[in-house]
Length: 363
Ligand code: GLY
Image (cartoon, rainbow, N blue to C red; front, side, top):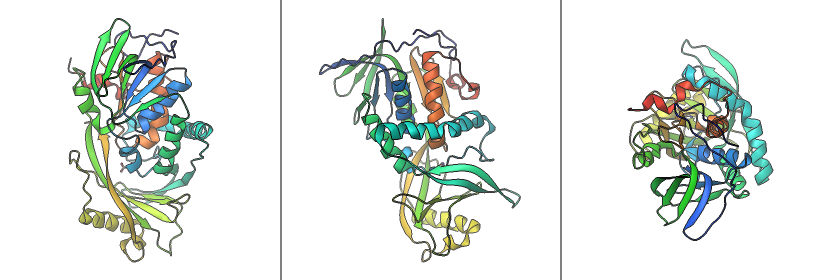
């Protein structure tokens, strides 16, 4: 199939006819090269694989070790404090989540359960409302997703960097730090908080995605509290784990900081998070009642307007799926479908004009 990409202001065509998987020591080919083996990158890889594309995913570190596993896992499509422009992608993704999990289970043999089915939302006027939203344990999800990807021919190259993306008469050649060169028809930048850094080397219009740090703690549930709903205000959330290895604990998060790539955890910040949580559920104020299990910091990929950046870039054959900020776990399934549609030039089922990379283009 040859398709015209209607999402771009230029004509682009991407075919998945080859299913190329030729591998020599130093040369190979893939219909699509994805830069970034986080949840977004691997969800796109799986979707493209299901559509018949050969896919190689490259990551400068290890797969699924950054924001994907640092997140709390709320599928917060109904959060009234989210920007309205997020709603179409968020709602589509919430709808697609069960099918996404079924696909992962079919490939990996691992069922990933929803941890909670409702969220108690604390409003600014002091009232609460109950939202029909799920949460998920991102560590369970990412372990199953990695097993699913490994059960397919998707090629995963970790600890590898891109050193050049050269245009060729048939598409692009992606040259890697390992000496391998990959002939490819499309490149997708899905490198989370590192997207700008990666793109800057190869693109005259890198999108402005910056790390936004979030510190979080996980505590044992107070014995007096049988918590099976998320509790969330604009400033704090408490996310109980009800199933799996973290059952009987709850996450409390998160700070929102412009701190570059720093991931230091500060005890004073954890104390502040605990105090905010105690405003919703007082039992969390006491470290004796709700002892600390672990703490960490993750780096959300944030754009200046807080919206994802999703679509064709200004350079032919290159696409972007990044900037998911506080909603990457939720938005992965829909991002994968929408970006695959864009790459194939199919009509889109939702309006993502507000998410276009062109809003950041300099020329
Ligand atoms: N997804 C929640 C957060 O970013 O804090």
